[in-house]
Length: 333
Image (cartoon, rainbow, N blue to C red):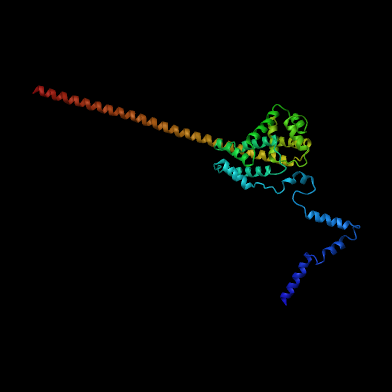
């Protein structure tokens, strides 16, 4: 009896979350027959059926029309990208840098495989300066360069092309004023920055990524802006929103993150230099102690040789005296 009562309660409670067994056509007619005119019910049913039969990339939207051809195409995973990086590098990454390098490979790969991503000179300048900052104190400078090369290969980029694009932006920005850059960020002029800004302003699906923002920070540094987050923030806001018409929030957050990391790296570099100075001082003290010990040993050797020479001289003198006494005795006899 108790079991049957519990079953009844369960069925009653479950019915509140399930639909009644009413034929679909009848329930549809009840819902919309009083609201739709003649023939409109069939139009709605047809639209619903069409939506249900949609395939990826075939939606009637601007985004699908532009990127629909990429639907279903295989995309390399983060794991595959890191495997390529490891194979290309051929070395074990220093333990202190392993997590950071892993994060770099993964985040860069996810940026690049986004269908909306377009590589430009500002982005190239940003990623190169970021890598140089992060790997500046890597113990083996040659391996640090190889890490950068392996990173670009793992994400399918030509390093020389990236460096060339970044250099073009850097060269153009030299000698320019903040007003000149603001004009270019508005899409005016014929420089490379103006071309990038104009393209972004005309693309509703333009993708912002961290290295674009850091590229703007690098441009600010090039034109003499004080590298302080409070100085950079309003300039970043002006360039991104007032000039390009894009949101500045993520770019400003990325610039703040950049300065926080830079401060930590600068502090670490200072500590490493202090440690190096202390080690050199200790080494110099050890060498000085060794030199003093060697000098004392040399002095002892000199004194020892003097004593040996003196002792030999004394023995020789005694021997001569003995010979003389013997000779005199013989003559007397």
